Image 1 (cartoon, one colour):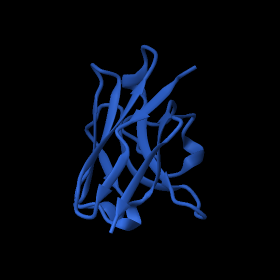
Image 2 (cartoon, one colour):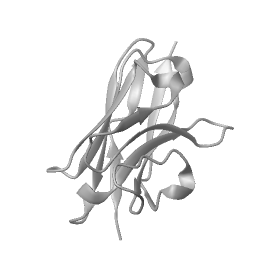
Image 3 (cartoon, rainbow, N blue to C red):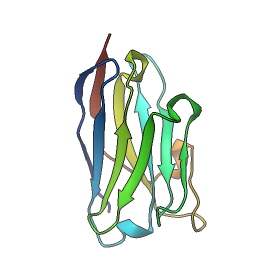
Image 4 (cartoon, helix red, strand yellow):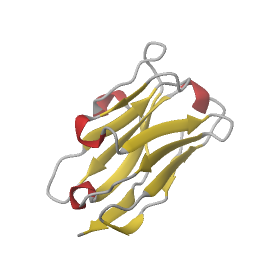
Length: 127
């Protein structure tokens, strides 16, 4: 069983920054691909960014490229999402997920590939 806990959400003005953290339990965190998803009210959960277990490979969806950066520190069992130049359309609940199976350096972009999820953290960007 893997437990994930997100933190770092909050209220920020347009153009501001936030850094989300996702800390996982267990000894195998460094072997999991990690991903960030978000869900706005009335919308489906969507993929935002992913990172391979080693951190070598990262991927960001087009709408956040150049603004968001995913990273991880396996010594701290933590994945991060640095969000800069935030826009009102970034307002959502942000979830991190852990994918425990898959090829080395694989970054899944679909929800069903993730086995464990955090509880979510609210990000609100005011205009």
